[in-house]
Length: 120
Image (cartoon, rainbow, N blue to C red; front, side):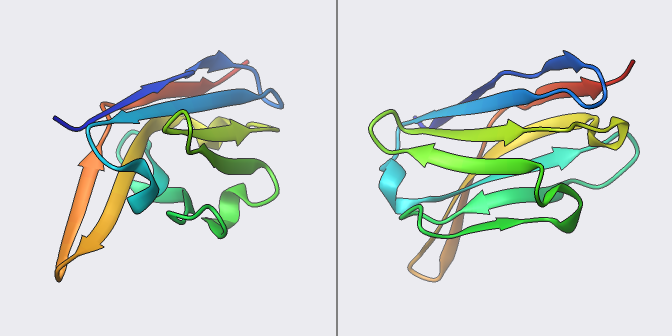
C-alpha cells in the first residue's frame, strides 16, 4: 500500500519560514519524481515545485522561485519543501505527489495535504 504522509504545515507570519516534509512508503522512492502542489481556497491545484527521480533537476513555479527549495533524501524516502519569506498568497493546502511514467501509463500518488496559513 502506497502512502505519502505530509507534515510541517501551520500558521506563520509574513516573512517567516516553514519546512514541509513528505515521507513515502510502499513504492521504490528512487523511481519516482516528487512534487509539491498547492491549492488555495477557490482556486485550482497548482504545481509548486518538483524534483526528478535522481534529484539532479528541480523546477519551481515563478511565484516561489528564490523563496522555496525542494530536496529529497533517498535513505529516508522523504521529500522536503523549505519555504522562506512566506507571503499571505502562499496560504494553501500543500500536497505531496509521487509521479512515474511506466509503460505508457502515468502513475500518480498523493498525500492527504497539510495546511499552510500565512497571516499576521
